[in-house]
Image (cartoon, rainbow, N blue to C red; front, side, top):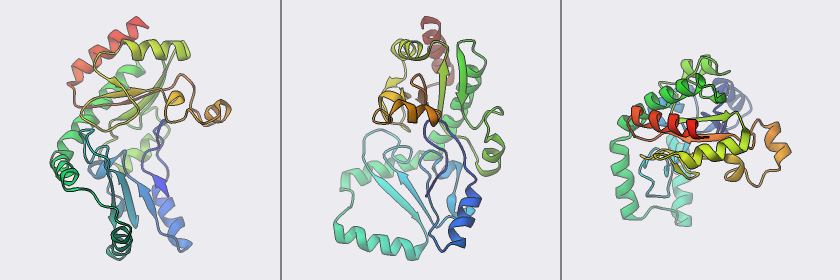
Length: 241
């Protein structure tokens, strides 16, 4: 099981090596493609047997459903479908309607989020109050070359750290106007969170730090706001923290 782009630090693994390892050992190659979406990366083209998505995020795109999706080889999907039907796991008709609506605009949304996230990452990289930016579209990212080889775009997710640690991070989040402080991602609105208090709050601090997740790390999910408006808001929040 792999992730296209890892949560929090936005690392990109050697995905082709993961496929080769799985198949060499008689395993099913599975990837979580939520962060990239099929617009930026199509796992079947790289040899993965199955790709899974939290459809609550980019596929739905409007923060109004809870859903999942799995894509892959027909024989595997048939087996999964029989199990799902037996257990009764399926979306209600209205959730299916909302999901269908979201899929119609997936390409337009993701390409806009790619561009805006890249602009935000470059702005943060040059800002004196920012000490670290994690975004695979940056040449400074350790997996930039791999991301360029594999992906059509680097997604709408990034994370970064500020001088001043937790205090500066909390002040920055509090002074933002456009991004909403919430732990989800992939919707039309930009969302910002500090993983140490949300997704990784149950993980001991020492383990988080070994994984590179500092208490002051900020994760930003870029939405559909105009890039200039979002950059202006981020600049004002940085000036105030």
